[in-house]
Amino acid sequence: MSKKPVIVFEGIECSGKSHHILYLSKYLKNNKIDFIKIREPGGSTRSEKIRKLILDKNSQFNKSTDLLLYLASRSENIEILKKNYNKKIILIDRFIDSTIAYQHYGLGVNLKLINTINNYLLDNFKIDFTFLNIVNKKNMIKRLNKRKLLNRYDRFNNKFYQKVQNGFLKLARKNKRKYKIINSNLDIKYNQDEIIKTVEKII
Image 1 (cartoon, helix red, strand yellow):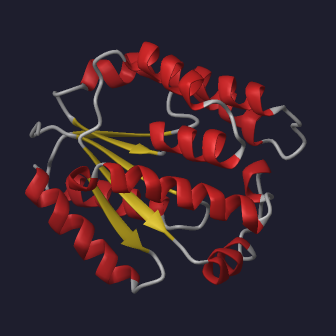
Image 2 (cartoon, helix red, strand yellow):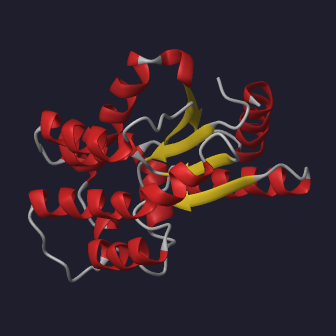
């Protein structure tokens, strides 16, 4: 594994992934370790414009359009990712697994189509490690209710989120060595420490 790995944080809404990637970012910065951090959808200036379109609560795209917009957002980030590949640690808030979990397992889009476009976009860009953050229904609803603003993907029903989370877990089970499941129903400090310990081993 590269000493400048690509580390991805995945999970459904309110699973804690964005908190943990921010915590890890602060740890790397405090230890003067070079890294970049992006999110999907979003990241680059152009990709952030696509993000606003995707997540707008008034948007009503069909599932194929949704997929292509997410992949368009990724396409706009490829130059940044490849420029820093093996040169800096790359942290990504959502990536390939989110596309598969949400668009395939959640919405039923053809998996072969998703993989074909992903492979074309990413070429030889590889993920080294993934933290999959999981959350139970009770805590997800509780946390969602605390959000002041809800985007379009915060408004699906619980059955949808369960399908997506199960999809994430299926992906994790296929490659256990490169995944760590973070149970966000547990104490947040415990999870922060587990993530830092894991990253220290990786780098």
